[in-house]
Length: 143
Image (cartoon, rainbow, N blue to C red; front, side, top):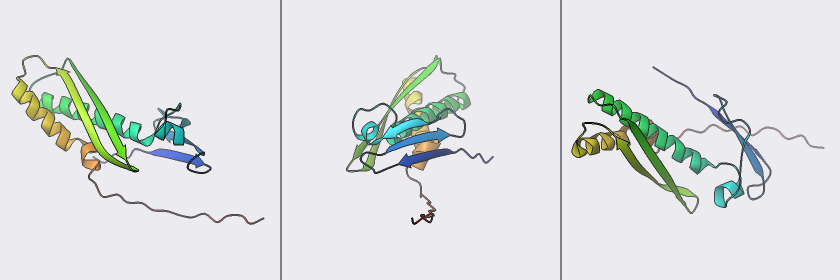
């Protein structure tokens, strides 16, 4: 099965004082603001690292739920927190903390299933993936 998902970033102005908006194909994000302030200080809006953290936490939780299902268990709840560290302009770490209530599951088996989820969720794999980028410079109008 092949799925395509999409998001679009719009940026206006310079890096340090410009403004951007994010839109997703599902319309969950519509004209969601992001800027230098939301990324490197405390502004209103989101930032790429926060979105990566949300994606990683969500992906790991879902992969763990599938792992539990295959192993014959059902979680009452799974809470996953992800903190993405950024140093010198690079994402350097994605730290996941998982808390789950799974009736009948041993702590050892839980750790095995979490380790598999961490290694095999799509976002974990993406963070180690090759990246493709195509770029087109549009002609500017000379006045």
